[in-house]
Image (cartoon, rainbow, N blue to C red; front, side, top):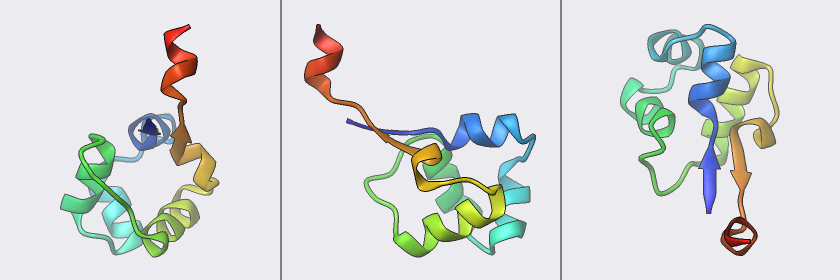
Length: 72
């Protein structure tokens, strides 16, 4: 399972969706989908813009969680 931590990261930095949209030039709807983990994919240029704006690494935004490890 892929977990998106954008909402947590934005909360820690006290940045809202409108702020991130202005900082990156990305559409608010796309950011909202990532924020709510309601997306089936994200493009590398989008991740690049978000990482630059939030001064973070891709691994701070996206995490892989092995379903089998969670069951134990």
